[in-house]
Image 1 (cartoon, rainbow, N blue to C red):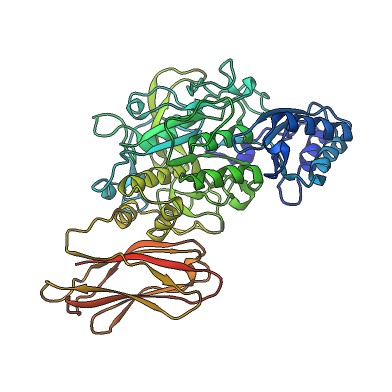
Image 2: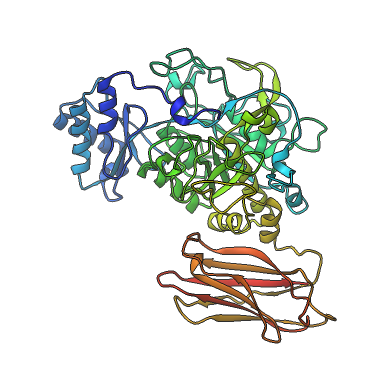
Length: 580
């Protein structure tokens, strides 16, 4: 995206509309960037309205009557929440009264606006050039080094976006998806939800999405994102996908003017194998979800609930940090928990001028910066149509929308290399194996620049070609207690250990910043692998360390020493290995 999210948000045209948006902001929910026409209501598990549409409809009618308004239950979301229509032309007091009625009900867990989200990138020129973002030494993600281990086989990635426009450099990797856009005005394809996620184009006329809105051409945003993840490779044409043997399931949630939370929540639920009323069961359940979209306001309870459920089903959720050069904590879904939130770097390795930043950002990846030259953007699959589809092409885009699919592709490579990885382990390994930013990032860009080769090697269970010795005896790590040691006896080798001894570590822990990890050589010499850090709040340590152990005799008993140095968090050393 070349402009900020705010620049793409329809302007509020009247004072009453602005007041209406403000009224929707509760103590724990940020105001939406545009006025809401609907509410998402989550009921507590024991409430009749949590399961019965009839009860939810009756409750909406009753609360509307108390507030003097005509409310209507629209449908059940995949997360179990109810979508409630607010009706038209509600004043500030009317909206406040409706929300107050819901919040006063002890059976209501949350009530939030159904916000409009935006794609986080805009197109640029269509010149073809090298994909520096994959392999260039300065700010590339070192993807080719991962391809010797995994290429994404067996993994489906759901791209929750604008849908998919046919492209021969992507088609072989596209499997069934769904069109989740319920509103025909947003859909732009003449109907509501259906099994066809084809992108008809998201072009708009002037003022169509609000007063002052400039006319736009179609972005083909979802197709660009999908190409970065899994464009067909080694076919003598076009671009290479990061996880080029993975499959893409396109889920359409963004259309004219954007897309609603309610549709996105259902797409998250369905993509991860959950059930959505009126939608057939998903036969292409995704182990990775990419959401290169977002809007103003912190993560709502409704969206968080859907994400938590997806992660609990084993699906990793990757999201764009946003393009407003602002704190990502004030944007959704970037600020949601249980996601991998991705900031964007330019070709120099510094934070791109537009990228959001902050403590909620987990990792950085190439997003491009076309202000310094078209070829400094991210090249991927696209279409030439300014409104409806025309001819397939390739084009450079920039944005955190382009950075996120780099991480989604990496997650697919990891899952392909090791199918037992959980979403928490995938996030931890990406962050643990990141390299320092080549440039700068004022405000924070997470753990650094993702390193595909190092990360996939760390989780693959493979060796670097030497002899590997492994301990799989699980060992509990006491909370704020004494160090524990796990031994490995090495025999049958000659001479000293190598100058690049590989130490693979698999530790689950709820706050890895508490941990100190040392390698203890047979003669008692210690090598510090990890120090405690009060700012390293992520879970787990799943990585491979490199130690210069050339002064040590190889044979003998080596130990991994782990100590938890602070209270409240616990963990387990699951396994570790030495590769000589």
